[in-house]
Length: 342
Image 1 (cartoon, rainbow, N blue to C red):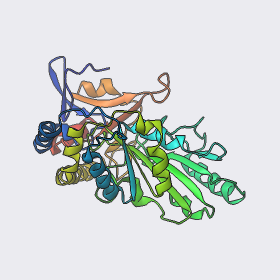
Image 2: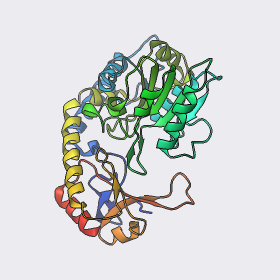
Image 3: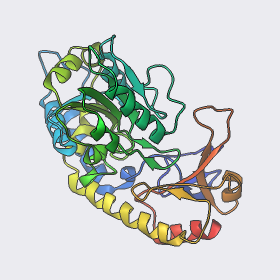
Image 4: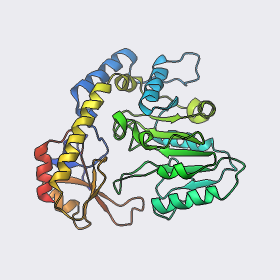
C-alpha cells in the first residue's frame, strides 16, 4: 500500500521520493495536459465550478444538452442522457428493465449494472449458452443481456459477435466505462465492435472519468422511449448534474483527446515489442493494461523505483492481481526501465 501525497501522473511522490507510476485509470493523463487545464480554467470563468440545479428545472443550462449531443457523436448512438457518475448511469440503465424480463448476466459485470450474481462461466461459454437459451425459448418481454465491455483486471475486450446469432428481440446493456474514450473509432468505445441489428436495443452506460478525466457519467442508447424513461427517473431528476466547467473542457478538447490517444497507442505498441520475448504477461492489443505473473508483486517493483497496480478484486481476501497500466504521460525511457525490471 502506497500513501500518495499528490495526484499521480507519469510519476508519483511517496515519502518524498519520486517513483514511476504504472497504476490507476487515468489512461490519457489529462490531469497534466496544459491545454486541457486551460480549458478547465476557462470553463470555471464562464460557468463556475458547480450548477446546483435539477436538470428538469425551468432554468436549464444549455451546456448539458450540448454535451449530450457531443456524446451522441462520439458513441454513434442517437440518444444520450448525462448523469453525475458512471455508477449512477449504470443504476439508471438497469432500473428501467421490465420486472418480468429474463436476465442473462455475464461473468464480469460492474456492481452498477449487476442484478444478482455474475455468471460463473467464462465469457465465451456464457455467450454460447446465452445464444442457445434465448433462441430455444419464447419470451413475453425482450430478454436482457448485461455485461461490461472490458475486463480491465484481466486485460480483455469482450467479443460481442455472438449477438449476431440471436434472432429474437433483445435488450443489451453494456457498461463501457473502461472503453469509452480509449478503444474504438476515435475513442467511441465498444460500440465500434457491436453488431448493429434491428432486433437489438443497445443501452450503453459509462463513466467519463477513466479516459476522458471528466467527473460524470452517461447513458447512450438506440431508442427514444428508453431515453425518455431514464429522463423521468429519480436518477436523472433528483441529482445535481456534473460540473459545467468540466463539461465545457470536454466539449472543446476533441483534438487534445486525440493527441493523447495517439501517443498512448504508440506507447502500447512500443511496450508490446519490448516485452515480446517475456513469458507470462497477458494483454490485449487495444488496452494499455498488462497482467503480470503472480510472483512479480508491488514489493519487487518498488525496489526498482516503480509502482504497479496490485490488489485483490472483487474479493479483497483473494489473490492480488498484479498489473501494469500505461498512460499517455509516459515516455519511452519509462517503458524501457519497466521492461528491464520485468
